Image 1 (cartoon, rainbow, N blue to C red):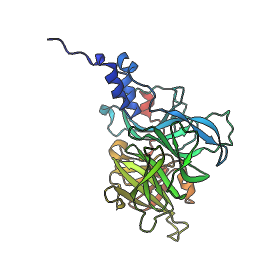
Image 2: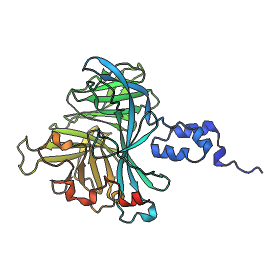
Image 3: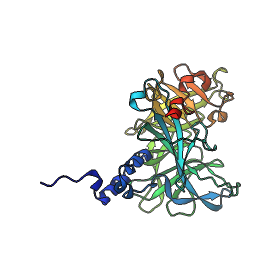
Image 4: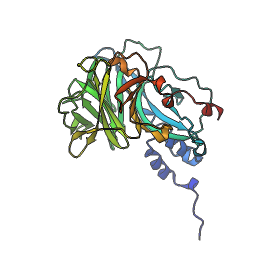
Length: 366
């Protein structure tokens, strides 16, 4: 009886198919690290850089130039399991540009220079928890900075169809769609100019309007963009700003009220309501708590983390990123925590246990 073939001898065609189904970059990196046969049978960057360049805007009408779209990933880096007893993890934002170079960024702030981190991170020796991602334009400081850059970009391959990009501009909140091979952005039909947020959920781009009306955006057989209703509007329209967040395979709606403008108590600058999508009934169901999870809320990406992974004792709070508060409150602090149990907003410095944004001592020592 012949001895079974080793894992390194698997057919290249099979290895290629397996690698295409690894949607998380860290999993693909580990896959390619097994041996030379596995590495040569996989595509190193098929999830990092989309196979297209997307048009930039010189103004809201004319497309003027094209640029690469890079993917940024949020990871929680934890020590090996035997060292995880109450050791603070590290939350990072990692991006790989079109030349294949990886860079580390501060997760609290978008559009900032990368960290100068003179160390190597060995993913085989660390526990890595993928949290979410966003897409950004690759910066070229020789470009004309009169271009209008997207505020937020969602890029997906919709279940076997060509990649599509859904984006919003600061000067035009109505969502725009770009299909692979197109030279121009197109306005998504049947959506209000009063957009709340866009996100990637279960491999599809989703968009929510400011009244809570929510749709899934796709491309039909004629290659025209289309929308499918997934939730009716909220009864009263809700608050000032809405965010979509995927959490434990469910879609959440974060509804933020600017209490300084709508007559609430002066000592409470904002209020947050949480909802979960009921896909069958096509409605948002109000939640009373996040339970044992902490919500990180940002303009370009939002996600939740369990208190077990964060090594903290209390959840049910929101940490604001990307200087998000300056858009709807006068609260004077760049990074803040909103305690949902108490309805209280405080500086992040008041919650040192949530400070996971700078390289911890154990990561430098290792």
